[in-house]
Image 1 (cartoon, one colour):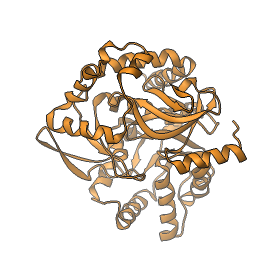
Image 2 (cartoon, one colour):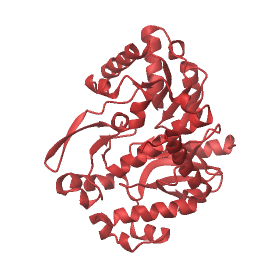
Image 3 (cartoon, helix red, strand yellow):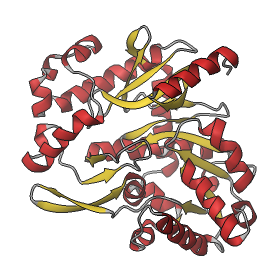
Image 4 (cartoon, one colour):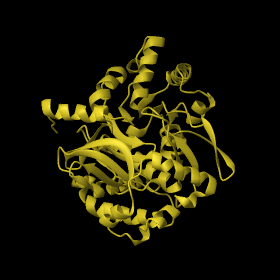
Length: 376
């Protein structure tokens, strides 16, 4: 039976809104679903997750994990089978950019991909439905994603070609294909480029040549790559993207302080259009901008959010305005994962991710609070 696309979009956005209206209920349901999956794994059984039914019990039975803690488990997934840590077999693997250290390599399970596609689309769909509907989705989308075919690993005796998460998700996400990526992700992959300066220039030039005559109406991607492409085009061709295309919106992801640090630069380079922030990472699509306020609102219906604050670990939705801490996220693949990001509550389920968990960022935040303060 044909499913009305508007109805499907509305249901997706309504689920997000329902979670924001009653985050406690949404988080309790998510936890029940996650515990069911964790309890099917060797890791979960060894920690007694089948006996946990409350948030307090969940915290007692499972420790928080960093990527360094996860690496040995992922190695066992590759050599012993997915059941040691995952409740589903990975369909592929992906890697991070490694901008804050060594690149991380994580599996992609069907449930993880499902959550990422559903939640990752909300920033785009919400903006469209608030500003004219489906027509805002029509037109080319500039594709600045990374290659998805960079390396090879062995899983269960079979070789798996994998690459960067942004390119992999763009290739696997049917919404991205439907939006009309320019160029297509398969064309980016075919270039066989790396992350050297020469690789960046080859990729940027290819994208420019493929897109310069096209009707590009939006751009989705990592904020530093978006500014990097614009600088390259200006240097190489003496023109800014704003002179090539009449964008309607910029969707920007994957780094902290997008609205403060990147939005002004992006508007100067691409034109005076809205910049929609999305808090996405290799590990999931966790939150996105809801309206004109320069903050993000979490996907309480898909992920389980805790925060380590100065007064202890609490639920994200329990944070008071102006309170900040280190976020801990539970996903279909990752129980109590210390993402490495610092987050601040801005009130009414609005938040801002203001940096990585480093002493220099914490010090900067303390000084900013003292001398500048905060405001909604």
